[in-house]
Image (cartoon, rainbow, N blue to C red; front, side):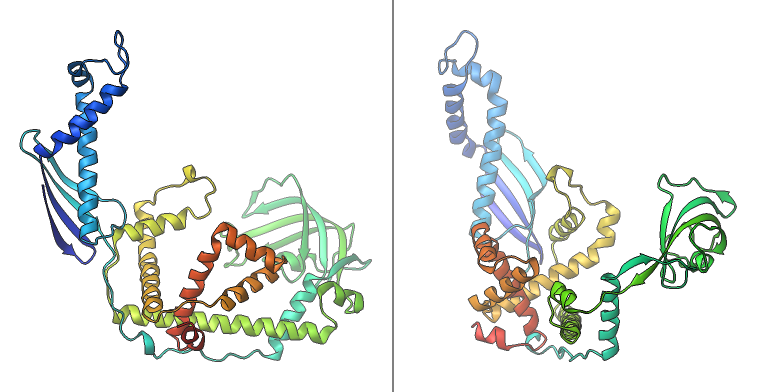
Length: 419
């Protein structure tokens, strides 16, 4: 038996395998003995079937099993000896079994190439400081007030900011009459809909009134079927409702978990500040990663790309049997982003290993505390669940990669303390 390993490329190894037929004799006899003990044929008790009959009926199957098992054993042993870790399945590109002298085959194995990332300790990319302005806080405050508002009936004509409730009576789009939905009722917040012309036609309407509204859909309407088209609506208005914001009294503040309006705005400011800073850090990390990718070119195995694309298009599939294979078009379209994600992962893994980055238990607990607060569950219960399910190790790995990402944009204290 002989195996020659060739370095075809940074991500590909080619194995030229030669297995003499003589090497199959012993495993074939062993497999034949197993069959002889197990096979039952009419007229013979189990284990008493003549060897010649077993060979006649099962000889080809036995040899096929022996060849497969021998090839697998040889390949696994040689790959292990050469310290080659396959990425994806091995690909047999040539196979010849003359059943006389030897089995010869050529096998291709994809691997992750070794990498040595330079310049990660000083990418020149840092996270800029961000600021939250008063008008941003006020805008978010107003948005929340709208969310917590109620609408109440008013006995007057509709105006901007009111909710108009009604029923569709007739709809014509570009001269073509449309079939009305089974539920013909609509609710339109005047000034907020995607069709300003429709809102304008309802402005000034009163409950009990029938209105005919003619307008043109915007060219950038969210539904491309209606963009730029003319519309004639006939509707009956059944109610006009005024938006009533909540009263910031003690009862309301207790309901939303603050003591007063000042604390609510303070919480909003803090949340916006965190969002802005997180966004700035994410942008900086991506800039640093792109810079390192450019400065440290390396190949990515095709199998890695295919696996990531398949995972991405099936990530929401509940039953594995419903998973689909990527199409050629999906592979072509999604490959560039998949390659970047794989390179990003490998770079951060390199940094984490090189810098011996490991999250401390306090950091793991801090992340669990954040999650417990977000999910409104007890910290100890969540921590116990993570430990029992094994997800605690996944969380540690996520934190390790985040700390490596922080490292390449100059955020060092957490990483350095973990050494």
